[in-house]
Image (cartoon, rainbow, N blue to C red; front, side, top):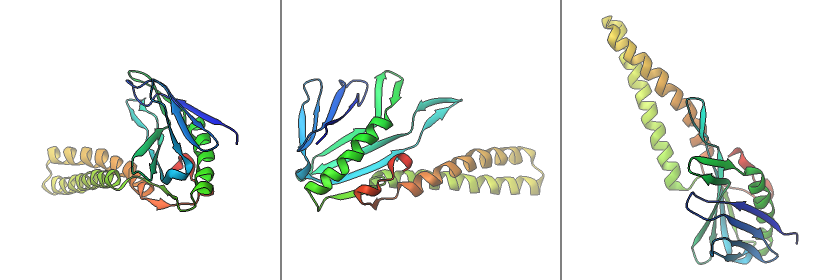
Length: 198
């Protein structure tokens, strides 16, 4: 089989890691942290995306994809499409990450037909996003109530506060809905991986 590699620095303090698809498994090396996970040992692969974080027109963190590989031993191996060049310097390596995943999925499926492939966030993370969405939605509804109350009483102070809350939290709620919708876990076939759209 053709060897496919992906190079990335998982975090600021980690050495640069090289991940390579060999004939029998996923191998990694870097900073003395060499290892290998056989395709036959992988029982689950979960892939999920995280939204871009931006502020004042600047991208604080690009959108990225995370892959979690679980082996028969239960120990997860996590890969990310992000590359940390330095403090505050993050590079998106989704293209090379996707090539690695595209080649990894069919190899695992062939080596272990019982392996499960999931897209979507882990339950705990998805529940956290749902909680954030509910808080934002509640704040939007509260803002609307303040607007109605301020308009009824002709209280301009309440009216302004309510409008600001509706605009702020309403926009947040609108942005959060697709994150929660796409974050729901669902099983997929190796050839149908949705890529980075999740």
